[in-house]
Amino acid sequence: MNITAAYTDLYQITMAQVYYGTKPNGRAVFDYYFRHNPYKGGYSIFAGLEDVLNILETLEFSSSDMNYLKQKGFENDFLNYLKNFSFKGNIYACNEGDVVFPNRPILQVEANIIEAQIIETLLLNILNFQTLIATKASRIKYSAKDGILLDMGLRRAHATGGYYASRAAAIGGFDSTSNVKAAEDYNIPSTGTMAHSFIQSYEEEIQAFRDFAKMRPQNCVLLIDTYNTLKSGLPNAIKVAKEMEERGDKLLGVRLDSGDLAYLSKKTRTMLDDADLSYVKIVASNQLDEYVIKSLKEQGAYIDIYGVGTNLVTGKPDASIDGVYKLSEFNNTPRIKLSENIIKTSLPFKKQVYRMIDENNMFYGADAVTINSEESVSLMEHPFDNTKSLDLNRFKHEPLLQQVMKDGKRIIASRTVTEIKEYSQSRLQQLPNEYKRFQNPHIYKIGLSPKLKKERDVLIKKNKF
Image (tube, rainbow, N blue to C red):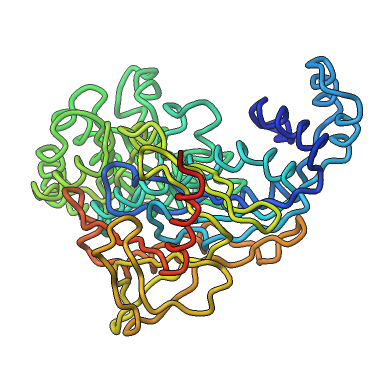
């Protein structure tokens, strides 16, 4: 899909027209963040930044976009402005692949108010979805441990969302994808086996296996549950594996796609080993997720490769991540959004976020949000509970927001999906296990510098009715 500046909500352009007529040179700072970790988990994996930067560098309204907006009744002067639209602002962000937490800036946009408003929907659309899927993938990786993970979800994905889901899954820890286009564009290893229909098209299962093995001797995986896993599929796979050995080839694996995967994997491993085929791997698929894989591990299942589809690329059971984009400064003046729901009260000012690193180079479990102009922070206060604070002097302070785009041009080197994945894995190793568990994970502390909290409270009092 060709993404243009019309990839937005209509109200963004409607507001932009008003800005054009009243405050065309207004300078704004917007924060991107989310309010809750998905899956009731203890962390999230930030994903989608590279795609956002690449799109913003060339974002413009096409001629067909302009014709459509003219039909919608926008004024000619404003339309003439949009003809030459481009994003010329600055972006500050965490590293893609980093471990992130709710209610603190993950990305900041500093730009002309019109530009900042028009890109909002695009930014939220990409970052929310990829962060959701990367987080799901990370949880699955945590369950699978050293097991190999294959993304098989394109056919069950939400239309072209499957393309970005494959990228995010790789960042979150998956090793390969069946999605050819995503593999090509993002240089992700591609893997595929076969469908039941391939075997059904033959009169005999073993002939289907033989033909497949002859045409695909490298990375050959045979699907063994079309008729009967242990009485037909596996015995035939063993015969073909022996025939392959005679030709100097080796069967890579057999795939289980139905039934009691723990029981069948144990039986399959025994039969393969008894046939001196200990090198043949066992692949399992069929509605897997982090909980099913964890259970399979606990049952002692012999599974080397996990093929995960629906539950990965749809982010099941969470439909989305609640990422938001809030104005925090306008023309160098702080702005705040109030709510009767405390968690929805935004933070004013352009900001920096510091992560606390302990003496073992582990994340302590606290990120401190400061006003960008503050040169240091020695105390972190709870956002709303005046009785809670944390002395930060004993920790190493790691600034998380760095400038990644200046005047509409990226200023950081592009990173491959593999590089982002490796970085993400290294960051997760610094996160204590208490935050990774699925049931009642530790809550990562997000606090404010005393100055930011004081200034925020002044604005709350000033704007409260």
